[in-house]
Length: 308
Image (tube, rainbow, N blue to C red):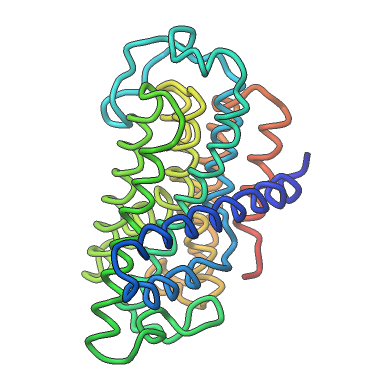
């Protein structure tokens, strides 16, 4: 299967789960106070559109990990240690994995909710008037302090909603707890990256925190943890995602004509190639499955050669 085909099929299922999850949340909100609905509806609209690349990578990480027989443990710096091997896990995970296969699309949708929430806050910080072809959420709500305040609060709600969805997913605690820890670390790293970005810090550090870990490593690691992946694949995805994520950010900057902090366009291209090489070197360690390896290679090529 080609990556574009894999991505298209995954996005269809992610969007289906996203619609269901947001509709369910809306019903819960309505029970609290109907006055919340106009604002919540605006946030739900802000979740539409986008490439869904993060959600797709959650699914890809899961598919790669579940096809491997992992009995090692996820280390403390990448999620809590697992005390049981793959064969000792919840019986649901030893037999028919169909429920988990469906649940992973809920997790992917949760990551996309997180992404939408991050963009809501980004637009406030950057004072961006539009997002995904429509007014940014704080503008859609209303200009001034009120619109900004409600947008920040809705973004916060999006973070917690994503966490809630993951915590309620039908995976064993042996998989879900380290996955939640990985997810929390992604959220924290992203916030710290934004702070450093505003401080005009080292662009490489910012790119790793705001782009590499958040866009590439985090989704792949989250999917791998829920697919039963052990410490090796989680660690390898971190290295792979760091290299590819930095190259992804440099590509964005090249497209936007913002390369001064990389030393100009030519140096930016050279740096991107260096980090792509870093990612490709670890690829044979991630999977021996030629089909999965091909998907990762094609995904990497698409990310760094895209025109928008």
